[in-house]
Length: 516
Image 1 (cartoon, rainbow, N blue to C red):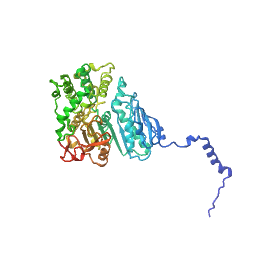
Image 2: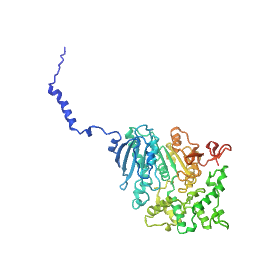
Image 3: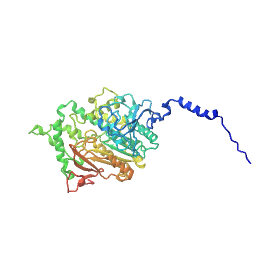
Image 4: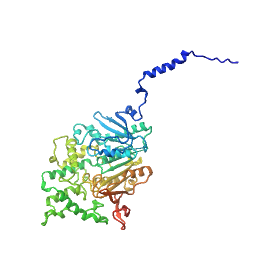
């Protein structure tokens, strides 16, 4: 029979480990024993070529945006985790990003938001809108601070950062941060941007087809060098010829005449031109031939209108450099295109094309400078590659929209690019299941204008990507003094909204999308 031995510890040996444990615990500062909150722990996250500079929980309604933002609109935000980082993918990179993640109610998805012009700022308003919908979201300053492009002089790597690298690196790092915070990555990743942000989205689709499941590209500055060329081309003609300028009264006169000539082409007289590319209007019809000079244009002013509409051809490539569409006249300025377009164009040539801060618009020569501008870009800023097959093949969806009355980025850039994608990939059947373009009659740059200009592309993209329901129409509305007074379907280009013949022409239900 086995004998069981019982070992008895002395009192000292029994309490010694516990005593030591207590002493060790007491010797450790309390700040090291309390684990930081989940959000704050992200400050120590290690990501190659990235340094976390901020990780803090922002209580509901307490975020204060930088000056210039509408602070009141941020007070409705829920509690979120705010992370900031600096990315250095090259030796000359200094890319700032922010990532915001809902503390509760995360929808499981990621939405990155874009920028405008050369702006080197975080898009807080875009992040606010995404966070309010339950998204984890991010934005970048594209690798520099402030507006303009003086930062580009002598810094080719920063031009690459602005052109495409900052968005790609931000997206990669943001997904790592999100996965670390929630212990799972986003189920779907989306891009949402307009203007320069639209260009960024197009660039992502062309160069990094795996970055996003769906992309919203509004009024994209995809033909960046062409827009710069047109803006300075027109400005050169008007800077030294004040008599050729179209003053506000002349622009209103011209616009009224264009609308009168082309409004009814869609069968409805509603003050909107449904398809400006089919509008044939010669501004020479307004040339003064006696009578009231306030009701006509001089020959020089007629030439200015013709210049702004015109689309000269790049002599090297044979591609049209698109002018503004008929119907955009109310957004023109005394020097033609918008002040933003001129400033961006001047900086493009001054700091990027010629590398000469003393270069002036008077030095511009279209025949040679458009060639130099496009050849110097080397697929860095322009987003003109029509081969979207890699993006489509992995299931990516692209929703592009553009206002027909945009006075800043020609809407014909969008229709021209869409046509080139269809031609490259084999026609409409190869494209429409993955890429749809919506043209908004009467809408200006990213919104505004006389036509319906408010619509929810995010919801349309979610339905397409997540449920396979492609948008056959997107309902847009227009509000006057806060009251919606018109709704209209935006149709996948080249289809247009056609009136059924019954009911109010201000109600979308009375229109169908059909081929022109």
